[in-house]
Image (cartoon, rainbow, N blue to C red; front, side, top):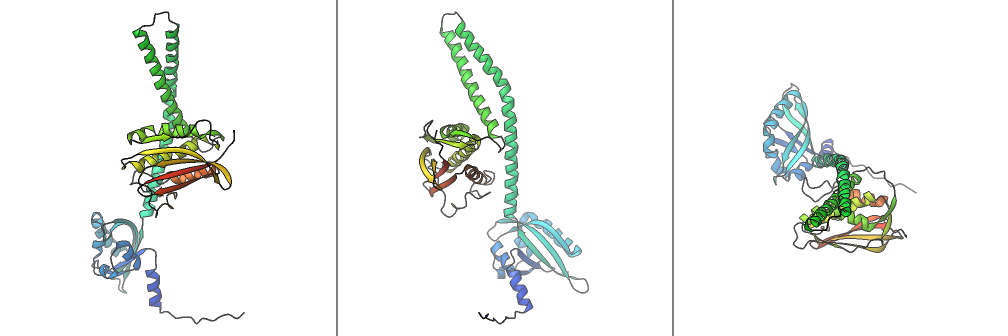
Length: 374
């Protein structure tokens, strides 16, 4: 088989460098002694929103944020003197967007050592900054988990005394020979209220301790009714404050799976919390929980549906929601880790999470877990 010969096309060196600079992934600019922009590459246009002609008619001060102007002037003087510099700064795009950048700059001099111009490479740091912030937030969450475990332990000690003393009080009231009266019944009612409230605190403390445990936990038979009921208990304050109506169609002792109960509970806590957030701006806030049989990878599964009446997920981002650090929530409201971690947990249990949504109508997250026949 003969080879086809293609004649090489010679490209002048200047054109080669122009092609390389224009296709460089970072913004590049060059400024003269007056701070006027004398060169930019194509990335500068896409990053800042100006045309190249606009940029070449501007001074460097016009593309940096107001709060860094003094530092910019000092840095420019320092660069001309020292010859190279690496700093972080803040650009300002045409639409007003502030863009954090890492800048590596070099000075160009003539043969007699006189400054001619700079050559600077600017890297957009927004994704890195967001990633750093998310990791810091995740670290704080881990610290909160440790704190929760300690608080749960500290609560349990005095709570045990309260429960034991109250149990003795109730037993003493039962043994007394006093004829029942209004005062007697009030004492008994109050003692039972103390017992009920103490049991609730004990249950919450148990949840805090279990929820903060490490990943290496034993596999056990799980009734999904219990996992979802516990998740609803943990998120009770959130669902109540958001005014969400809960419709729980799941029956006890019917749907069993094998796995780590704390981790499965964590998945439902996250999905219920997300559903509440999605409905916060809606007038009709209804959360429906149900379980139905399904197939996943030719395996019989329980399909646990968490259906909300929220704003729904736009079609263009629905494939991205399970990616780490992807979030539609405002800064400080979420890390973008919840769905990614939840799907990882469910896949560790040989299942998966799927989602269906209509923008403006609501979303259903379905947790698929292999059936265990009891």
